Length: 603
Image (cartoon, rainbow, N blue to C red; front, side):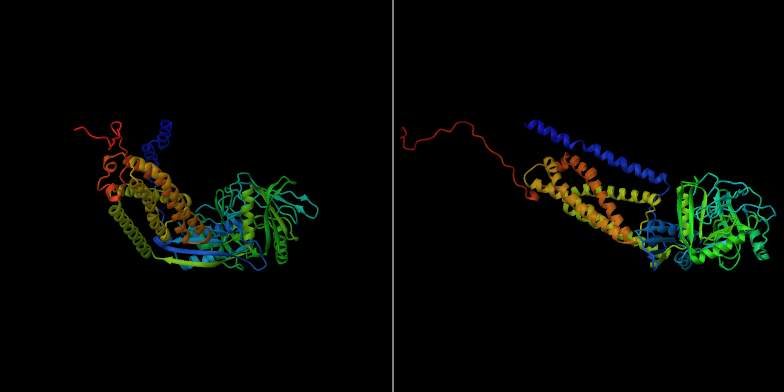
């Protein structure tokens, strides 16, 4: 009966050497991946690297309910990201946090005041008539008499393939006719999701019929000199404008007013188009709603529907009535978001009902992106600055050094305690600590380029706290082993008998720590989440290290003479631990014969 049981125990213990090799292979693989990725240090947060961090909280507009949703927040993130990039910031981060917050992290070297102005204002959406348009090839060009079709969406518009000159056919409907046209290639989604390859066609309806977009071939000849007679200054600016230059695009947005004609840029599949646009005719706030819908009846695929307010309906009817009688590209109106052309559809009749459609062989994502951009002009969301933190590069460096010094001091104190109290066992604990530190460092480094994890000061604090949590797991296991040795057992069985009890305690303790970190991560906003994330990560790594490194290493060391003999410096000396002597029974050498004391002895 005993032999099979012993065999099962040996099978359960397995070969600890294999487990050690497994975790070392994983560590080497992650370290190799870290070097191959070109990122050998963790990304630093604003408080350590220097820069500005802005936390925005979304608020519903009065009378609007349930406007704070993921779709609207993502649209706001895209627009704010475009604004920050317009400042020439290459490493800025804009991301949602929780269900109503947006975090904007802008690295050092950026004008903090200008950044706050950019991210704190509401998106500006206007409908402007197109006076002239031509591709921007990077060289200064003047508009020529050859007509060109208008561009399609940019920052959330419907992106399409190269197209031909506009060709339309009126299709009778119940209450209006629906002209058809071919939209231009000009356009790019804020979310970078518009990647349609099919050549779209746009239509414009009074009610259900499409508000057609006109398509532009990037290789077409430039647009005609505008008949709207823009000023010579605008014409000169238009001729010199190079929309392929990021700084030029940012500069052309400066100081523009809705009541003035402007020069603007818009991106298309083949590059950038430049426009001369007239004064704003309709404010984007007059768009009551914009939705992406699928046209099942007309087989036109995905399209975007717009509904205007009462004021917007009148304004839109006026502008479409004026544009319908003109020649391309002056029969187009540019939808301009934050100074860049989102879309430039054309019309062939006045739209007086306040309803319009834009169709163009959109994919579902393309249609939704354009609808989000259009609706954001009237998005029932405002943002309140919850916190703004600006840290200089010098101060960030000092905080990083202080955090590293604090971590080194904490680690040194733990090591001193382990050596003084556990002696030889401290070698196992120190080796485990260094393995845990190596795993933490490589994972944090790899998380930087993958999920944009940035190590901030609270995260450093979480890593320092984790030193104590990890050391606590070793102490629990070592004390269980010592308890078994005190009971009079030798080291090898003591190591195996102590593990089940220690394992339960370690798992319960780490579960409580991880639960606290998870709750903290969910309910907090901003930098505190860095602390919670690091605490949770290191708690999980503590379980991995104890199970896959500390326990197998302890099993192997228990076979070595230094530990098995219970030497003075092993930390497992039975005498020093007050171990009980083993119980042993002595067997008699022969039968015992009773002696009768009353029997007289012979002389």
